[in-house]
Image 1 (cartoon, rainbow, N blue to C red):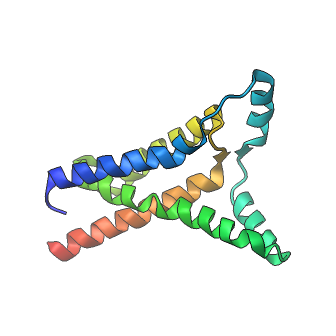
Image 2: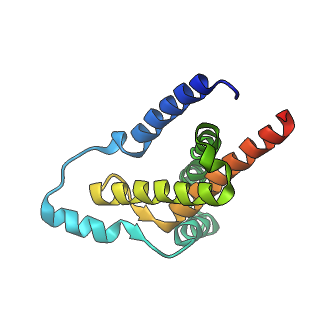
Image 3: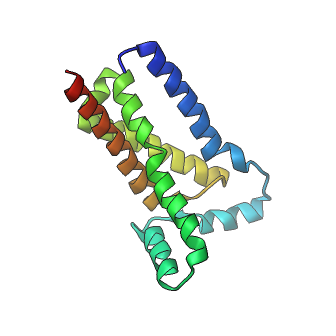
Amino acid sequence: MKNRKTILVLFIIYSVVMLWLLYGQRIGFVRYEDYLLQLKAKINLIPFRTVNEYIEMYNTNAHSLVRHAIINLGGNVGVFIPLGVFLPAIWEKLKRAISMFICSSAIIIAVEFIQYFTLLGSFDIDDYILNMIGIFMGFLLYKLDKKLTA
């Protein structure tokens, strides 16, 4: 991906699609009392709790939910792989792993907070972990591409 304009256009398209996936599908209004109750229900700060719940569902023969679990877990990884490619391709400072980690952590935490406070999703530490795995898979693909094309 040598052409900077092409990369920027693809990044913008990716960003718009991600914004729609993360926020655009679920816009609605909630009363204040309901808002506070939903905030309490939409937070998970225990690592791998959600992942373990999906595994438990599978083990207890709740196989009808397996598709949902695969889409949720795989999607949280898969949709962020392109971000791991785009960020270092666009910004020179993000070609180092530590810079990439700090920047992508800030992005994912911001996404989680926005989802949480707007009730357009939840704040789930598992989402953060899975999103970061996806970003670093993309980052490794970017690094591999640079090494192969050097």
